[in-house]
Image (cartoon, rainbow, N blue to C red; front, side):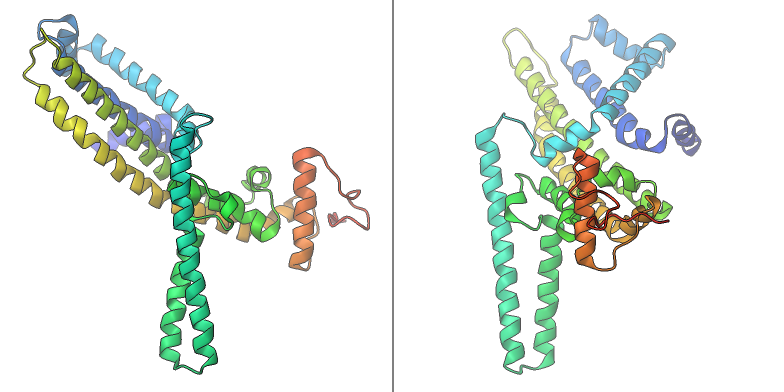
Length: 334
């Protein structure tokens, strides 16, 4: 029965909307109702309306379901906004706090870079001194592990580091195409969607849905924690006597560690999503050139020049050379 209901909802709304928006909306709506139910007097109209929901009366239940769908649509529309907030893009607010976070991320970046550099120097010295292969192999494995960690968690250059761990993981995917191939990722990515294989599209969609779901659940946990804290303060006011104040206190305190757990899960999903994006540029960039009827360059240097020229033309209409001329790297197939 439950599987049939889920299947029906998936057919109506789509899997992505169901996971990222509808389920979290239902969760926050029910949690908010629980707070209100324990906060308002037992004889109030709101209390009676919630009781009618518990009995599945048609009109209150219909209103509640419609409200959940409206909240879900808003969540779906603002899913990128929530991710950007967790990436550390806050505009001009919280400048000092963001500066402290950025300093901490830069410290982690430099510490990882220093450890990697020391291992590499040690490896070169041991190899030159004729050390046995076992020690060299172990050191090589350590270097590979640090290199992979740095590539996953941070962008290549220090100036690209941002204020949060999640932001740096996503940023590493954003700058990867330019660092490797001179590709403007923002411009080219949308055009690459048509040439990406179905396997990679599924991988991208699954990892992105997981990332968005965990970010939204982390946000919901924070919102619920703030609701409980506010309800606890209200229940502490004079002339308001509630026996459920302990409910607000416990859940208000627990919500923030739960939000952190969701955030750490989102970080793992972001790593999978970022690595999938990097792989797409590695595997499908030349397929995009063929789709555009552009001759693929023979060397990596020529490819760098081609992508720079193509990115500038698509983004700004700038032509370094007349496209198709003997000086341009963009040559069209006959």
